[in-house]
Length: 369
Image (cartoon, rainbow, N blue to C red; front, side, top):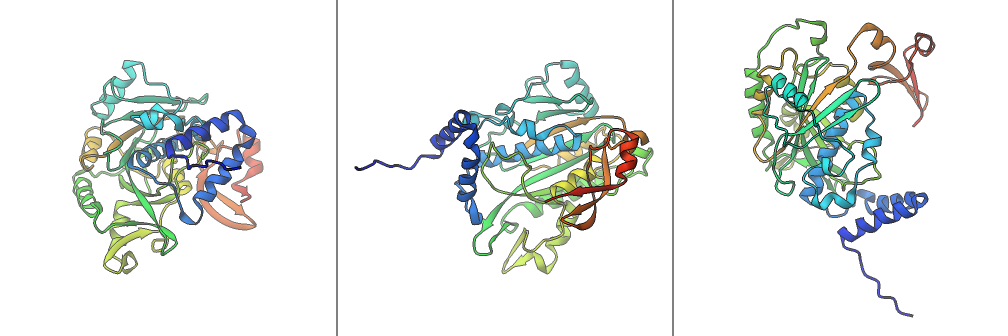
């Protein structure tokens, strides 16, 4: 008996994938295993610019939710890959309610001095602990032609704001690792533009306790592994996050040069913030410019290159108090025991909800990998 076996095109493959997951949810893990086999040893299905931009937008919103303490995994599980081909932004394929109250939009527009309109794509994510993240898509650049995604994050509680510029790494089969080729890109021009804006920002000593920072640098780069948009993946995109000055310094070191080109990746740049470290520091208000946002955000946005998609995330949460910090409703610097090894870190910790539980826990968190 002869069978007419043909390869599925990417569009129909994803339709079939979603259909099987819906009809046979108990077998979804087998599809995940198949996806892992396809991406093993760095292999990956062809990824176009649209898919890359959607994945970057998804990660940008995920970072904002983690920093706010709002459930990211629940939202990521709602991604509808079947609708990705017609989406104008990630907000079209996740369970998101647009911001309907004009007064809220006007309040954000006035506070941040940005041109926000009711027609802009927007969404609001809340939980029962009075935490909220409001998302605005600042640009109408088509996904197919956009050169990248920028996340502008503003936290009301700390009056902090920072800009994360996404860059997509490629898998280097020869070296067996992920890397981004700086030579031939516009990274160095972006670093110069950021330096000019940084020099123009007002410099002042912290006027309030919430203005204290470990770093007042507003510009960050996140070099992400370029992978397909996987609805079953609830995690943030793996990658390297660095401040603009740290990246500038690294590019001047011998480690950054491979032959005649400059590169940044896992193999040559072990000093970077992973997702847990970046979220933990940002969540506790230790990162980002401090003080009043009036006029400063517009200056920061001026450093963005044309053709990129801007995602504005406005984070509101519980007021920072000594009691909140003690009860574990923010980021606690903890000692983590991973497979018997003790290490210090500043990581998200939402555990204890009573003073008795806190006293019992101390400052130690046990983690099994």
